[in-house]
Image 1 (cartoon, rainbow, N blue to C red):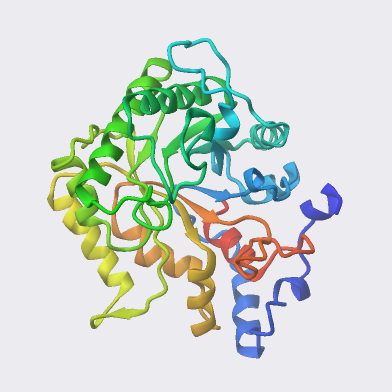
Image 2 (image 1 turned 180 degrees about the vertical axis):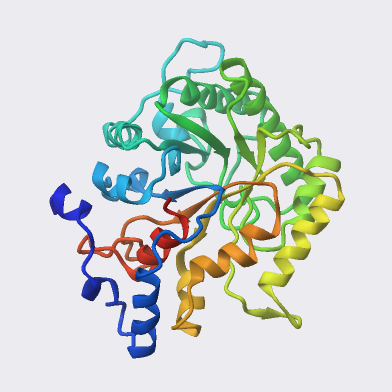
Amino acid sequence: MSDERSAASFRLSDAIEWSGLMRWPSFVCLCLTLCSVGAEASPRTMGVAVQVSNGKPIPTQAQFEQFLNPGDYVRDVLGWQKADPHCDLAGSPTRSIVIPSSMQTLYDRVDAAGGKNFVTLAFNNKSCGQVANAGGRTFPSTPALRAEFAAYAAAVVRQVPALGGVSIWNEFNGTWDGGYTNYAQKLTDYCLLTNAVIAEIRKVDPQLPIAMGATVGWNIDNWFIDLFDKYGCIGKGDPKVWLDIHPYLTGKKISGKTDWQLWKQSVANIRIDGISNPLMATEWGAKAAYTWQTAHPSGNYMTTFDSQVLSQDPHWAGAIWFELLYDRKSPNAGLYDKSGLVTTFGVQYLNTFRN
């Protein structure tokens, strides 16, 4: 697919083709939506996720330009094991990490498109003696491992161009839980790592936003309250320390309340505790968005999420849609389909968040 085709305006017939779900009522809604381009956009910094680190395609500069406002984020992981293959960064502040050529191309394209790179720091490093590179079996829980991870984080800040922020780990309260069975030890070790990373990054860039907490789901209040109040995480109330969240919400009912309502209450509890840090959705959308849209074929997930989530709290740093390109694991959530054409979600996103 050429850059010219990806940059071209989508055809209406392409935009309404969506796994057989679109029918005449939805067609009419889409036509009305297309006529309302220029509606008020969200003031938060938005962005899109990619998976170049997992061998997925690198979006073209034109694709980025179609969906990014100036300064919007593009998020991917830069794995510790790939960036630090010799485990020799700690104590050598001038030593460089290895940035794979595909990732460097990604970073350069984001920069050229006027966006900001957002790097998730994860997971483990077998070169440092750990049993696995993935995040579900182990965690950098010793002083030596923490020092090496923090050195890798600092090097990322020095070397990645147009860097807009970083996050520490991914979904630590979910799949990538470090293999822990003890909650207190798990959060203690996470805080020790986070504190080390923040300290090293601040030596390089005192103002760079750092997202911490690595959560998924609506039930995040006790997690963040415990991190800051019980287990020693620094940065409570720091506007440059963001709360890393993945609010995959579908409107489903749990114990008589929708997850929209449960989310609002969870955030309210965080604010009551004095945690004023901005929220940063390093992922949202994906299967949750498709599930909601399937149940509401004439609705608009983007505007619903904006009203039910983003507009409910004044302290938002941003939200990064998962994901920009087609992905067979979430085949209906891309802003582009597998042919490189803008999807229905893409139309919604452009109308809601593209200035």
